[in-house]
Image 1 (cartoon, one colour):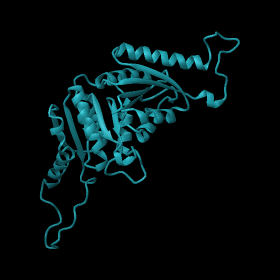
Image 2 (cartoon, helix red, strand yellow; image 1 turned 45 degrees about the vertical axis):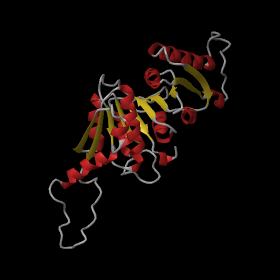
Image 3 (cartoon, one colour; image 1 turned 60 degrees about the vertical axis):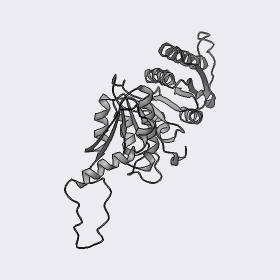
Image 4 (tube, one colour; image 1 turned 60 degrees about the horizontal axis):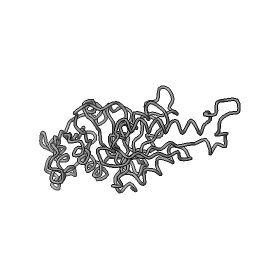
Amino acid sequence: MSGLVVVGADGSASSLAAVGTAAREAALRGAGLRIVHAFLWPAMHVPLGPSGLGPPEGGLRHAAQRVVAEAVERARSVAPEVDVTHAVVTGEPLTVLEAQSRAAELVVVGSRGMGGFIGLLLGSTAVHLAAHGQCPVMVVREQPAAGGPVLLGVDGSPAGADAVDFAFAEAALRGAGLLVLHAWTPWHTPVPPPPQDPAMPYAGEPGELARTEERLVAEAIAGRRETHPGVEVRTRAVRGGTRETLIEASRTAQLLVVGARGRGGFAGLVLGSVSQALLHHAHCPIAVVRGSAAGR
């Protein structure tokens, strides 16, 4: 842990909501907050100062400074006890925030920014950071349910182990319960090996598949209850689609935590289809945690 939460600010309503959430996250952690505005225009070689025909406080550079000042004011109004720093960094948002994530324990962004197109549910910056950020990335969508649990989606893959650790730590920080949810269908479970004796039936006994999936949940969180004894944990293995199940459960959660890729991911992909669907449709903030093996 570096003791630093980073949040991207671009002047949009979505980014201001992210700033407020980031301030609360920094307060929970006893961490500092760094507000970053990516200033693209110098690379475009356009005039940055005020126009000779306009007011002296005009121009792109002053506009960037106003964005940061508004974000700082929002952060301090939400969490006055947090140490807030700010920076205007030359570069495009994807590159700037990915670089900032290397020194942070958490990066927070809004679901859409000033560059979003009408009809799009999620901005490219949020998707890119969730796939490439060097620390957990929290995307702020709808306001979380007050008093709801931290919701953790698991599938038993090794890549999800860091997400499990993060979810337990978040529940402990918030004094919240943790709901560990695994959704499965017969079509997406690993195929069992054939029996050694050809005379034995290949199909399992009735109910065996459901029991196997329940064991998967228990194995996914093994040992974490002991490290976080104060966290009240509930587990559920639900027969159904992963996307639909987690999206519905997020309605009553204060935070949804998932890994970047699960056991159905293809080699070379850094963000799985389930994670992408949740980023677009979850009803609460969502934290995407890349596994250590993904290059963090």
